Length: 77
Image (cartoon, rainbow, N blue to C red):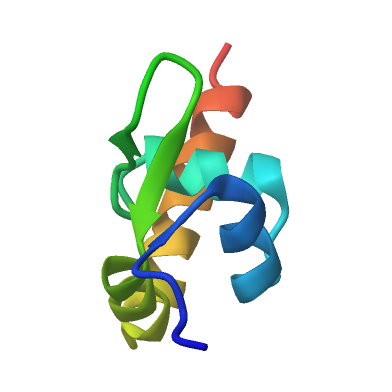
């Protein structure tokens, strides 16, 4: 059977082996692509867009920059 073109959150975290909260942080910060809403309580992500994002050689640097910015925000008085 063919793989789905769009993935729900539970499928994304299982396929890419990431935690839900971390996945949502990466989406919110723009490191990963935004979802497509299917309604008020359901969103889907393009498998092709996620495959491209997770295979991007610059992804670790983008995550590191996001984490550094987050640490700097927490450290600021």
